[in-house]
Length: 193
Image (cartoon, rainbow, N blue to C red; front, side, top):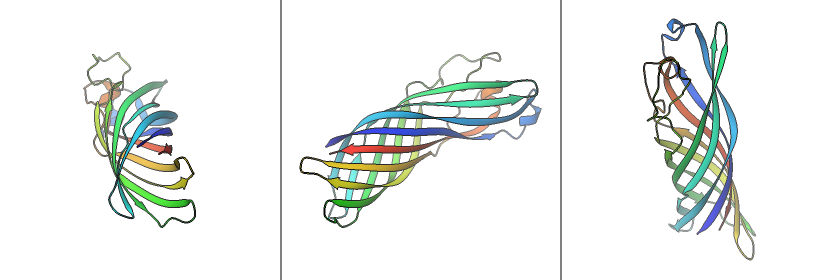
């Protein structure tokens, strides 16, 4: 048992619809990322000398911008995210050398975004990028366990990529011009157990 403090950098991978150039005067869509942060808990079950099963429930705050370039203007739409994430991971550890140990980690992450605009009213004149509330992602990374007399400290780097399409489709320009949208997240965590 323990807790974690995390910092992150998130952005989107955007695949526009094939008919992008036919939509109004829209020329391109791109994602701009921003740093985020979060807090969480740690539940760890040892499955042998080298393997652990881990649950890391976390509350995560992140922002991203989606930039739409038109012939005559650029529209930037901020997409806020306040999510409850549940990473379900397997940790493979090396032999312990003095007070340190290297490990690799991987698994899936289930997420619910409280700030997603999936249920919000949308229209042709509203600048909204509406995402789905539920997502599933795969994640992988590595870290170090550093043992002290009182607790174990573990800095960790992970990459998280969503599997499902996160865009909540509608016929309007801002959502309708995106065919497939996935979240990308680089996360640095500091675990205390």
